[in-house]
Image (cartoon, rainbow, N blue to C red):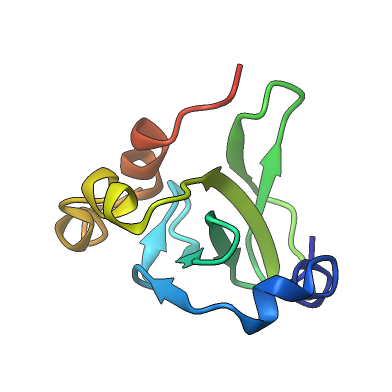
Length: 114
């Protein structure tokens, strides 16, 4: 969904504190993503730059696609209700983000909901 739809579909998100976990996450193609967590909803989401897309399949797996988009796209990758728990799951993110295809590191921590 695009960024505006993300906020419009649940106004609680707009009023909530958000924590950012870097804006240099990359996929195998080198596209950049920003990772954020919405405190009120517990949603951990990736915001994709306009030239990259994340697709979710029927099993809930998410993966980068080569199709371009014209707007900022948001994909919720997990719901983590507690900030301390999220911090433990993301321990080491600041080092992982520097690696090529750093989305793989995230994928290992937040596997699909099969």
